Image 1 (spheres, helix red, strand yellow):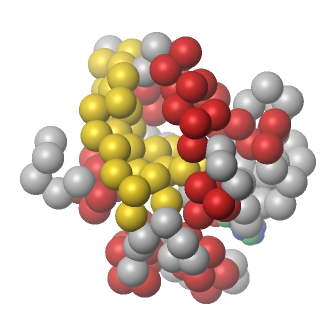
Image 2 (spheres, rainbow, N blue to C red):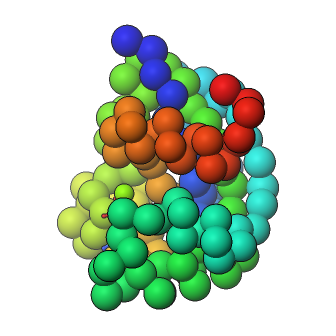
Length: 136
Ligand code: DAT
Ligand code: MG
């Protein structure tokens, strides 16, 4: 079951020089990069991407953080790509993320957890449209 997922190396990951590490893990896993771009989000795009969290107390911080510098957005394709990347990423809270995962190896704070990966086929379709309109 081939599917697509939207993955971000967030601004903390770019600043810390972790783009290569994330890409190496993605490629080693066998997922295919079918689109990729370095860009800095404006607040409206960030709010659209994280719309499901609009009512959360951390929403303001989340938008400030994700717009704080360049990020790398990519679309990955492959067998069960959505779940496959979420497994590579590890738990949202890096303290709980298993060592060997991206977050488990590289992060400590929940607000700066290096990567984003879509969590369902519906989210993936919505997020891919935000970052790569008209490409898929
Ligand atoms: P994920 O990124 O694993 O899909 P999520 O969708 O629940 O997690 O949350 C989106 C991002 O928001 C998450 O990567 C980091 C931030 N976040 C989540 N819960 C938080 C909290 N309790 N405090 C601060 N930031 C939080
Ligand atoms: Mg999420």
